[in-house]
Length: 327
Image 1 (cartoon, rainbow, N blue to C red):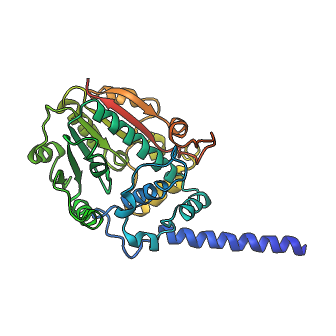
Image 2 (tube, rainbow, N blue to C red):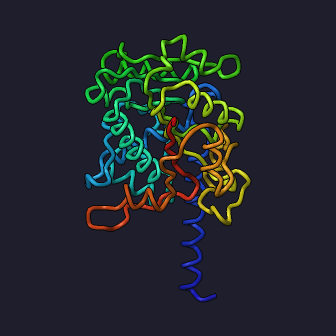
């Protein structure tokens, strides 16, 4: 065997082994992880991605979530490949093709923009369904001083959110309504009504990073609730997956293969998608009017294109973002 060829082969083998070890580190449950159904590891990763891209040097691409870094568990940076400084975080993102991080940045910017629009249009309630460690209720308080924010999530997530808020802000804000819900025994309308939600007020619903983890029945009932129990002009922004991703069509959605495996391994598998080309009909039959339905290229053009016209990073093919209103 040619010596040079042998040396190159050895390098490739060493690199392959190193990559395999790092991938195993990435997918092996970390010491700080909690059992599935308690705290969401995907919510942690989303918050970390926001925190990294909130440091982006280009204001055209940078998201405005200045609180995200304070809401990430410090242990995450020790047990994850991701690191809190922008330079290293982006290096890891590019090296391991974590394109979901670019998507999270674009999604954050898009949903922030729609919340600002809702504030301008007179929304007086904001309901965040599956809030995780989202910070909009705190970042938008000055812009929406008269609005009432409701945050809905699993009891353990709400408890952990409050703990982190106390560390980050010095106290748990008393002007946000926290609505813990056990989806096995409780439903959103009942718990929201108990918490003081007013169906007669114009409301903006944020449903971020949730639909693909829950059943079709749950998606259906939630959209119908919004359509029938909020004032005209209310709207919801949510992201979803094409059904092909759920069915494992990784020829059409090649970058979804690793992501689908990872979330399933961590106990939060993707289970719901909307058939390709049927998203508008799906929403309209549930009583809502589509305002926008952004695909990856749309998100790249709006939010991931730098000031010099170059693309900051690719937006994964696995997600779409819908904005729909109550007629």
